[in-house]
Image (cartoon, rainbow, N blue to C red; front, side, top):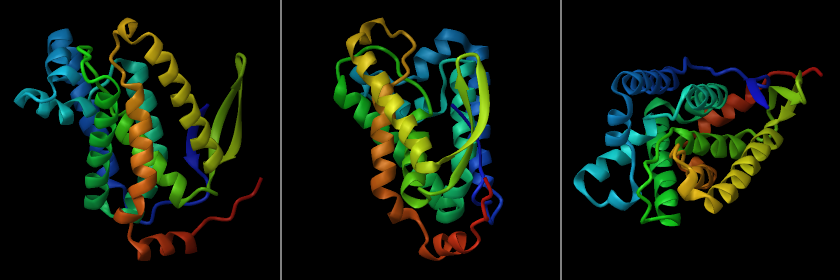
Length: 227
């Protein structure tokens, strides 16, 4: 499944923070391409080293890194579909704080499941999972324009956000089960448990960051949907 857009609403305000976060992720990915493995290994998170001064810094640097083109394109696509609406309802600065805390919560979940791991972990997936968890709570009935693939063929359909995000969450859960059984074989360092931790954080805490006035305003401007 590939989400394309939220067909139920449009952001009231320009999503400057969402675009800024995407820009930072792209910039860091370019640095990865230029710096190669040395850059990736230095700035990725290694759970076993998290209590060192440099290890603490990598909590933040690793959440703006990606394991390859497919990883960054997938993450940024999901973030662009679900991020602007959450920035709109939170405000730019609260949204940034929420995003960073979501990434930290994702890291805590990953380190908790395997604190002695020496495999580098990286990715914005945990923070983006927090955004998706928040979206599920705030706008569960929104219709998401989605490309669904059946074999080699794909068709565009409209899925309720609760279905779209729920299926994504389940896919991450199954990925986590597989990852736990072969953690030493996973040299990509994509932290699957971080998806779960970020998602749960976003779903539980989103109301603390949202403006009730902004949320009600967004609901009032909800777009009519035609099948």
